[in-house]
Image 1 (cartoon, one colour):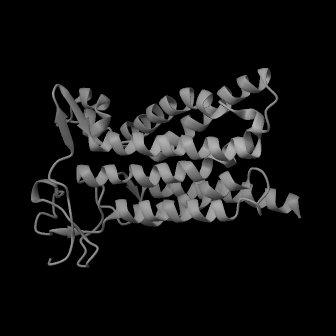
Image 2 (tube, rainbow, N blue to C red; image 1 turned 135 degrees about the vertical axis):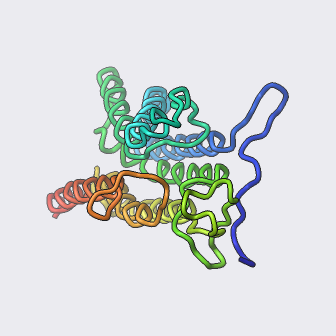
Length: 268
């Protein structure tokens, strides 16, 4: 196609003995921005909480990475333990493969316990207030992190003929799609969707009660992820015409929306 988004020809750069993977660089950049914005928002609302975000992040970030990797491996076991898989590749996270559901679940759980321990020593607000402060930054981190998939040439959607389609080299095209050259850039769709939600939450920060911002983040992200996931053609477990991650997105969206509705009713 004449106009299309090209896939980068390299996903890493070597500086002496050091190899910098762009996927990892996108993740790290997103995390740094999330910490900066989360700390700025939290300390602005609660001035006596300086350093809390950083102290919690020490536990939450590694837990999020581990949770994301565990979810990915659990839902794609054949890629690592199948006939053509290599178990050692489980640890090669720079090649991609961090399931957002596992990252959010285990990262939030670790953040909750770390925050609770800090609250025993300091006079801290509710964990819901902490989660609300971090939600927009987490979305921005997800938006930036998705560009790592672009560098790796992975997780794209069905074939597409449009100016915004993504050109995929033949070597990276899945079986059955070798004769198609351009595809839906699902990484771009999700990146834009995350950024749009982040802007919305920042604009509504004074209009929503405590706890609702984080739940609204989960709800809106899950709704968008449900439809974006439906465009993807990478290998995944499917049931009844929907991919496993679509069922997870639907369950998470309904659960978060229910919690958000309860909070808003209490406010009224």
